[in-house]
Length: 319
Image (cartoon, rainbow, N blue to C red; front, top):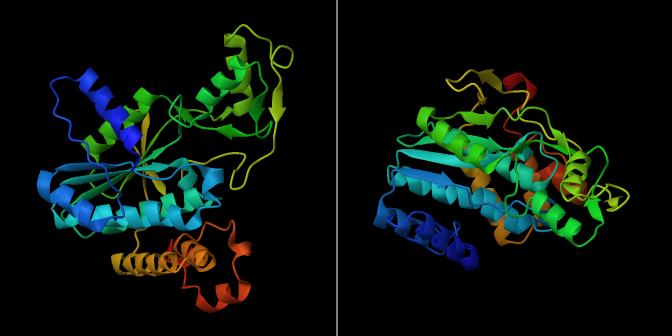
């Protein structure tokens, strides 16, 4: 619901595709009436759901808003899609949803579970695409490094061993379109991005592209991992099994699916705790919904954790 970004997207689309009808709508995915109005008015056949908060360290301090947007908002859009008999719903997820160590990743995993569960309700097919880091996208490390190098340094890297999976913008677009074309519903699609790249190596290469010498002309300064950050990311959960696709670089994963009634119960409870600004209890509920998520629970009341935490959706025997 950022009007400036909406303005930029509309302007770019009209410039690139002058004969394409573009209808911008400003609003929030948590606004049920607004979302329903858009679906009723325009009757979309396919929905690409990319709306989410994504900045990991920032969101560690914005628990309520992250849950509202990434979980409750996804629920609102997904249920509206089912109600209006949308043919296909494509969720844009993240590799940070795999064994999440932060609020952002846990909420994206919850959104994945929600979509896989709602896929069983019909008639809408729910498909998930799991992204790595998209090179040169807004908020990514590449534009930041450009700014820091142009300013003469230092280039800041959190840790010498931190690494991430990277994909280009064309690869990201291709992943979405291929997944939408072949998805039958309930799958998670992931691009084969090769080996993860060390961020310090990326910084060194970018410094050299400017004709500078890393560590001599431009300092690389290590600042330490920020809240919610991991050294490495993963692409799949241990309870997911892989299948081949017609595309060599496109991987497909399937996993156990939760009962939609259980998912809806958690969504209702999360909505209530967020409404009451009870972030410790919201974290407890989020961990019960996403058992792999452990980070930040020490901030919650241990007694509350034992007394009011619902049973986890998964356990080892059910995987």
